[in-house]
Length: 66
Image 1 (cartoon, helix red, strand yellow):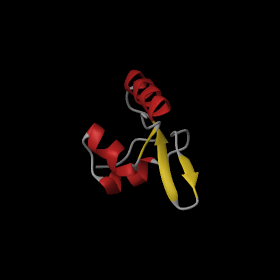
Image 2 (cartoon, rainbow, N blue to C red):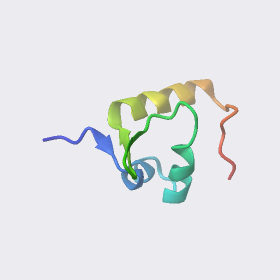
Image 3 (cartoon, one colour):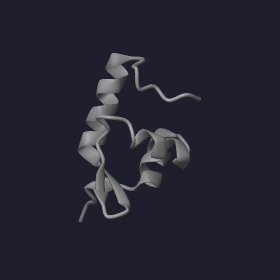
């Protein structure tokens, strides 16, 4: 059975950023995240859609600092 969500580590690895940076991203308003107790999961389809929207928007007010 295919997983429907990513862990924070899996999502970070997919887009080539550090795990701490991904934890910052899950706090951005509008970022697709599911919290189950203390566990954080990122829905695959919504994450892909969010990335596409952010890419077409370019720089936004929620940009993370390097």
